[in-house]
Image 1 (tube, protein in one colour):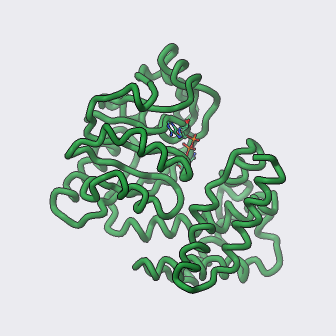
Image 2 (cartoon, protein in one colour; image 1 turned 180 degrees about the vertical axis):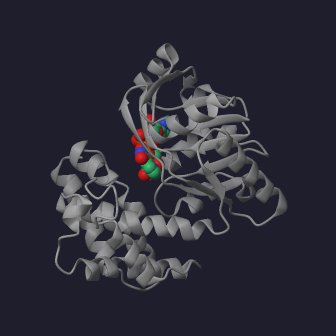
Length: 312
Ligand code: NAD
């Protein structure tokens, strides 16, 4: 398959490297010149579950590539998606599938501004990867990827299943989802509680778990997510979802001492967060529907406040 990775950071480079190793024709597109130069000169340096590998891959800026691919995988941060789609839209042929595995909410609407809905594939991944420097990446685990087309027709389903098979064949466990919006909301609930609270409180999930009344607080956040999800046709069981997010603060969760990615982005690396596509999205959509999502609004303001304090 001819595949373009639109955003060759931690996640894009990981999926791209695995897909290239499996024999697909992969090209990395990115705006970061040092990243492009390093990949072209030395290959993509890839620490694959502890083993160092070098994968030869062509990299360039979006405007420099013009071959229509079978698949574009977008892998920017949420707030960069729209700009990326604008700069790769010349690559969308009549049958080019566009797969979005970003964290956060509202991306389907952004994609629809650029891509024929029959070619849009939405997904969720729990794989974790990090950037080690320009041209150098590390994958720590192959968490499951779930994918589904957004238009319910035979050709769209077949296209999505072909992409699932291709990613699976590259060694990354991938399944076809029958309800991707449920999985997207479920992950957003986890990120909207764990990421947001640990970032504001500057703590890991184990420490978050020691806060008195935590279950009530997280339950309120989840209730607001469930309210907006319901408006958009997805039903979340508030008790089940609250149990799930609370579980991440217990010793049963292996990564409980882990600082979530939003914490790492903002506190460690002074990078902008994806809060507007998590709690911020819920607060905005609630307001548009004449409702209130007080907890999500407060959390969003606090995270933006922290960005300001840190000069991000
Ligand atoms: P990243 O910042 O490492 O990579 C984004 C890349 O996109 C960068 O290399 C950047 O230069 C490039 N880019 C951004 N805008 C561009 C533009 N307009 N033109 C060209 N290049 C552009 O981010 P990441 O960690 O790979 O995360 C991507 C998404 O995946 C996020 O939504 C994140 O929340 C989600 N996610 C990440 C992980 C993880 O472990 N890193 C796990 C699950 C989900």
